[in-house]
Image (cartoon, rainbow, N blue to C red):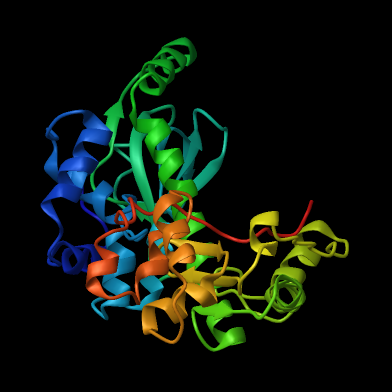
Length: 334
């Protein structure tokens, strides 16, 4: 079968040219297959469009950040779908697919493939947006075809596929991509509001007041690129009612002595840090707070990111941050 349309194919070739950590490639292959992939082209399509690396990025997202690809390519990672589909028919040059697991429908532009994809054909396929053409989707790579399957055989094939690691991995990676995108957009809002990616407050009460102001800004004023609007506007559009006020109350650990802080890292997300101002003063030599330093060294729940401005000899005392997982602020209550 023919490959993807030129614009998306060219984008993927650019992305393949970026140096990738061999350990990431090996981990992705292990998670998907448990062994080196038999079809390297299909695996690379998966790695580029769906795999989330240790920084919380897909290869496409990294390529956009590096200036290799246009920002339009971000749609690939946000809208990619890999599933078992059945062909319901054709509409002009677009094949009409239905997801066997969810019954979700998708029209995929596939000119010249009518003979390969007659009605009732079952296929395992990765579908991506054609980045140069809004609202148009194409195949990424060549689908695996299963011809002549009746309804029972389709369900048997679906059950067998669902027993493999692949569909669960696709679902988990899709959730990760959404969460990391939200995290990066929230971090940009945090930076815009406070003027830095970390902030120290004179007291827990002051932190609470400023956090309430920020949450209002985050919901009502900040335009999220992924939404194309503020969260409040998106909620009104999708739900048809007014969003509820987001109430965030800090925990007791932040109400102790010292000046608490918030650090919102682009990769590791938001962290609330007790006596963070005192820790930073200790690092800079402004004031000695050995008890605060010991607290951070002893408590595994306190992020190693708090040590990023510490002298090297102190950074070495705190275990390095593990592989990134999303850490975001509460959204609008439903």
